[in-house]
Length: 222
Length: 222
Image (tube, rainbow over all chains, first blue to last red):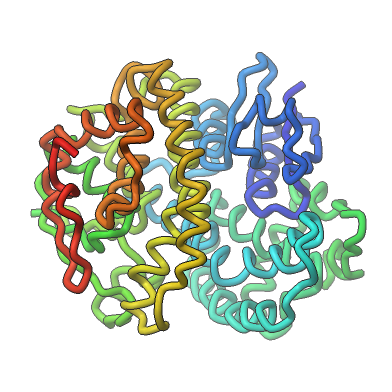
């Protein structure tokens, strides 16, 4: 069986896991504590980062960019991208919105302060930085709302990798109860649709030692 | 003619420019001072980031991820990717190495301190952060050397987007004379090969007001 080296609260690993589950590809998960720089893992990926996918034929695919493009090209029973180039451009624009802009402004800051500092023994979370990052969340919630009020899913009529990327980032914040869903009903409705999909269930079962999730994290009625 | 909104010392814009030039696609460049949040530009890209490509048919492609994949799919006279999936995975692994790891550890820090802070009126460069970032440069120079001692170009026998991404980041540091080329002869030889290509010439002509380049920046014998 294929194996994914991952971290449960990494948005980039969650995006890949959601793709694997939506495509109904069986995968065994291994948590890789990348900060320990394990020799056997560095041999797979000298960048010492996750996700890393080991395929059934033992081939190695390193990093979310390579894995996402690879899965979409290699497994075509379930497509998670539109077919035309302009629509692909729009989907990739939105993937970058979340993987670059949202990560830099919101999720990357919060996850670094709350989790990475603890894991890497870099001291305590900086409450001011977390507050500043979460203060930027509403503009992104509004943008999602605007998109899904004009389209069925973020990039158009069909579910695509853009939805999975956005949900991957938001679900990591939601684990800590940091998403004010009730102030953004259209965004909440979109997230409820994703959360109800079978592919989302394993994400909702994630539990990270030392970091309890909120009670509503796994509830479909939140 | 197509138009690229860009910033001269953005590694992500330089990667796209190098692709356009290697593919011999004519493009007019417009410098976009993204921090000014110009309304007409926000209408093109609400993320207020560059690069943004306007095609000859007026279609808009936003962000380096979308543009890179789009150019490679739409213009096939000159390929800048290998053909097989395992080789594409290796190329994309290396693109991520530079666009994520190298940017986070080295180029992103240096460029933020030296340029972005000045542009956004956020105060003076932090010399300690610059020193710490540049202290991580040698491990990356060694990694490039190791790759090109085992292969012709970074991802294999042919020049690919991995070389362009790596050169885009290094060339921004080189603009300030921050790359110790002579300590890394194999890496220097690889960069000389890139620098000698016609596609590199416009990059070497870049001049940014308020930031003079070093004398050796545009020299092929450096």
